[in-house]
Structure formats: C-alpha cells, structure tokens
Image (cartoon, rainbow, N blue to C red; front, side, top):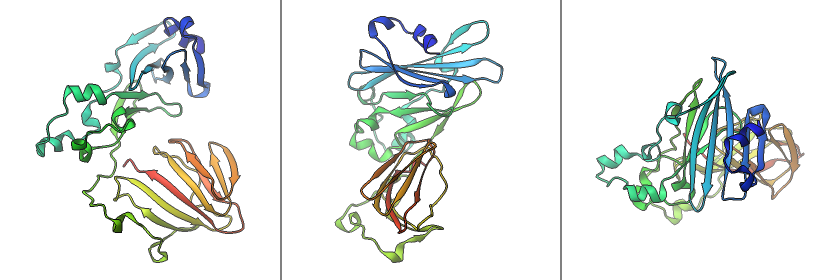
Length: 291
C-alpha cells in the first residue's frame, strides 16, 4: 500500500517523504516530507468488486490548500476519475446560512473575502468511511463580524454511499442573540439544579443554548460506576478530574488517574470514564455539540 501511494507522487525522492500514520486494517496511510504539508490515501471497497482510492495533497503556508483526487481500481487497471463524480460541490452555504443573510439584507461574501479566508480542508477518514470537510475560516478564527450570527459550524460530513458521497450537514445549535452580563457569565453550582443519572448526578455550568452548542458540565459518579458504557460520537470532548480516581478508556486501552488530570476524547473513537475509587468521582466535561 505504501509503495502504491508513493507511485502517485512526483518528485518523491526530492521531498524525502516519511510515514505519519499507517492503518492497514482501515486502508489508510499518511505521509509528509521536506515541505509544509502532508498527503493521505484512503481506500474504500465498492459492492461491484472495485476499490475507490482517495488521495489528498495538502500544502500549508499560512492557510492550507487541499487537492483531492480519486481513482477507481479494478483487477485490470487503475483509472483517475474527476472528484466531481465522487463528492458533491462544497460551497460557503454549507458553513453559513446564506439564505437568511439574503433575507436580512446582508451583503454576500465577496470573492476577495472567500479567497482570503474561506478555504476548505478535506480529511480522509482514519477510522470509518465518511470524509470530513473543514472550514479554515473557523480554524483560524477569521469569521468577519458581520457573518458570525449566520455561522453553521466548522465542519460538514460527506457520507459514504457505495462509490460516491452525499452531503450531511452537521448544524450546531443556533446562537441566540445573548446579551452577556456578569450575571449570566458567572455560573454557580446548585444542588437543586442537578440532574440525576443512574450513576450519580450532573450539573450544567454552560448548556447547549448559551454558546451555540459549546458546553461545560460537572459529573459526579458513585464508586464502581460509570454514567454510560464506552461510546463514540462525531464531536471531540475533554474530561478534567476534580476529585476521586478515574479509569479512562480509549480505543481498547485504559489508564487510571486522579485529580488534576485531563483526558482528551478524539472524535469517532470509542472512549469512556469510570469511577474505580472508593469515593465519589467528580469531573468536568467540555464538548461542542454539532447537532
């Protein structure tokens, strides 16, 4: 697989590529080299017996530029196919509510602004089948102020459909016109406002409605318990242990840690947290919900 990947590259000797990630079980490989950027390759099995091969070339000098290519591989030959045959067109409307902008009389995003801020990055899946498309406008915090209230989120997902991909927008909770004050920017714990769980209780310091899906909650878990079994979701998440002893689970491996320890849960990777101590486990969870 690695040799086949290098055969796609021109000037591989000069660029001195080196392996970043190799997942043969997932048909995925990633390389970088003596340049600002990286390349990835992903294979998908198609029901007709062929394989779809996706290749990205990403160059980063400030904002990154991604070139996306596809090939169809059969027993007899490998043929390049236009990306437009495989993935739908990605536009600004996938990341901003352009229809509402028109209704509100907000000027369209100009080509100059688009060229400067609105590049898209295509991320081939390390695990799973779907491609993620990221807006660099969000990555670099370059959303012009007049467009911020129309923000639909930083990524969309292209869903695998046996040889092609369909668009699935992940829209965050809409940001309300919140007037920030000292009163609503300070959140104090109250036992009366906790929510019971099968393992203990939770308290939301920041709920989904306040900051367009960005949240912070505190969970308290009884000894020997966990709020739920290991699971995965499209959003990433942080845990921070305040009190007690936690067993972190990530992709089949575990680690035990105590207070003042953080745990990052990457998107679409199975994770969990369990109380393995003799006292209550108390931790913070930070997450941005996409839908």
